[in-house]
Image (cartoon, rainbow, N blue to C red):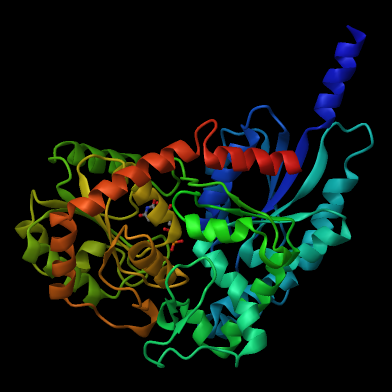
Length: 483
Ligand code: UDP
């Protein structure tokens, strides 16, 4: 009886608390919270509590991101939210406009004293008898300067990468290249390719993140990448059988790189914030009435709005192809409070019965719906994983961040998507014409059987990876045991 009590007590002692520091945009926060839920609910229970240190950027409405996070964790009493105070003297806004990665890195460096204070308060609130010990920090990759804070408190830092393993290959390669060759990349140097580890193909320079082509942001990318090896481990939101080459490469611990854990796909749950429930029902009810694989879904992520002239070209393409469609339109609310205003005159009447236009879409539920036959996507990594998980073919239309590299990965490396564009850059302002979009949609919806068969296998593999005993489940267990 007594020994049983001691054993129980020791087991309790083994429970850990983790401190997560995510990056405050929806794609990163959704995946981070979902990972937190997965760790908390892993059996046998080892993670007792997860504390999210929340912060925001000055131009993101703090109250929105907090309510967004609160609604994500409301059913999880063991996930706590601590909001950091505002950073005094943030970097000038012009830097963000010019070189966003550089702005973000500078901003995160300015957070160091605030995170120190928050950690010190958290740690001093416990004593020896506390059965839960803080086992480490889990940082978004933009937060790598905070590894210094972890070191000060003797806490290991892990990185949670909301991107692909192929992207990690690029992050491994960047500092090496920087040391050997001239800095920066030249986007205009035609078809130049580079040997990124983990890729079978040479990677065209023009599909690298647009930020690498400008000195300030290039330096920020290299600085972030240089800090990756200091992490105790890197959790990647992907799965082994999807990116086998990249994971094989990291399995060999090249240059003593930290262990890499393929733990995905972490799909964000359906009870999303930002979503008007009656709107969700309207969309799903409409999909219920459509034939199987008949609807093409257009959605371009959570961040950027398309130019009005681009929206018109998409509308025209929709009319040209005549397929059923579901289209999530994001417009700048200050410029166009009513997105329907931008659509060509009479468009809604002409496509009546053929499709739906909506704002924020319940994307996971949509991609899971049998009526969806194709997805024209901006190739954000979450969107790709969600689409693969449900075997929906993608036509690639990357826009910003690392989406061009993602498009290259799924089209050329993995043969899982249809190439519309690989190197389109939203910020360059090019307008893709209706004919080109229509051509891509036709190929997407007419679909090759080989691609569809391959997608079906990947969808099955994605499902199995996170199930009890699956490769990602085992990797999560390895990570937790390592704590
Ligand atoms: N999303 C959504 N509805 C929308 C737009 C986006 O649910 O109308 C979700 C999408 O399912 C994904 C995330 O927001 O989980 C976007 O992440 P991603 O990495 O694809 O792109 P980002 O927005 O970060 O560029």
